[in-house]
Image 1 (cartoon, rainbow, N blue to C red):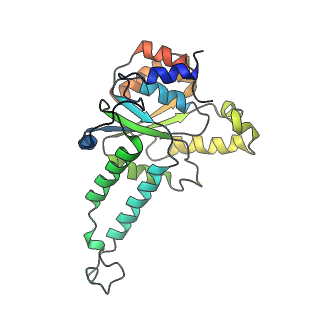
Image 2: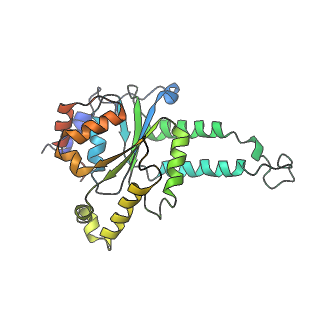
Image 3: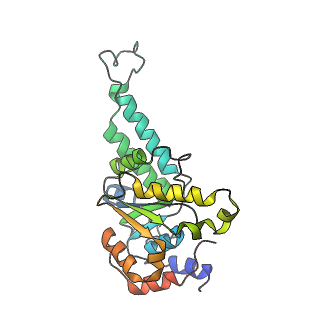
Length: 246
């Protein structure tokens, strides 16, 4: 197995859009991106998946961000709720929702999209498909997954969603999970949540099975077809031979 340092060196090459040290994008490109977001749970192989996607031309998938995307979507949902309070007197300072009529939801979406892209993702200039992964998807952190995904699609529009899964028993015995009480039940609940949500079967969603991804190139090839990027057998082999995460 190659070392983690070897992976960092590989991903730092200019031809790889996901390299963090690549030149930063021009700010005016925000509207030209396609987006991809990975939702999963810890120790599911999501870092390996991220590494594979970043080996593909034009792809830049960043790591976790403590649910910054979810919090921005909550902001958008609050703005929508406020806009919905328009009444006969809402344009008057005597109304409790004074100013609600001034909220432009199209502008709110555009600003959130721009803010997240430019301050969290920071894509390099050659990136065309950008996004990130997040493992904080349990009920305590994302109470309404369907609403969250709905907001993501509304805000980013041209978006692909990846739900990443791994064998629950194997995951429950990996790293911190094996020291965590009720780890199997916790992981099973999150995994089921990813399989049963309103977007699980939609055309813009793809389910990655970790065991299938590492078994051979067929699953990876199907993923690249879903994303609309070319499959590279050599890149797949190199990434699968490289140690990821910790």
